[in-house]
Length: 249
Image (tube, rainbow, N blue to C red):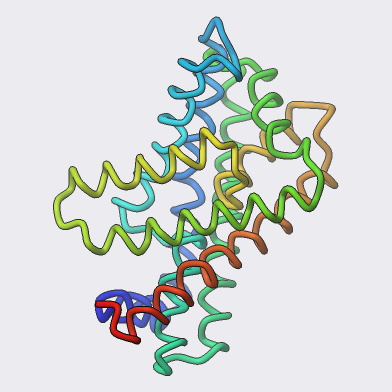
């Protein structure tokens, strides 16, 4: 618990420019997961529903998270748990938490948008991913009722909170990689809405697919973000802090 609180405090007290740049870097790096998904869908003879393709898609989805987390960039959905700990412990204020969340989230979104624009501009000339693949990936996230997006977003935030919790106990690189893959591949194979990775996935659809609109993007991003925050802060941050401070270890 102490290591989690110290980690959260360190990030809360960082300069705004460092947080924003780290968040921007994370937004760029996480885009490689959705990009690789589009490449796999393009090269695969199967598609969604084929078990082999589903497992492969979930595995490459986790690549972006590995780049971000092992590279120690700032990801909003990690801080829905980590940064809550010092607040619950009385060592940081809600205002400081809001500052951290705002800077990291904005950096993640802008970084993801920059990555998407770069790929959409460059990749048609490379011929490794069809535009239809990007649209198919986006449709998997936006073709749902708002209540589903919110509830599934809670599950995604819950899993990311568990990832932030578990990763502090993993000392070796191999074990950290395995934990990251296990959690984020679970999000991928369940097609849960992760606000930051999904930002890239749905923006791809906005750019290349006539069936994905800016309204779809805004609805997805708002509901997934709120759901992720609730899942990470309440179902992991609040509950884990509560049971540990009451003699849970």
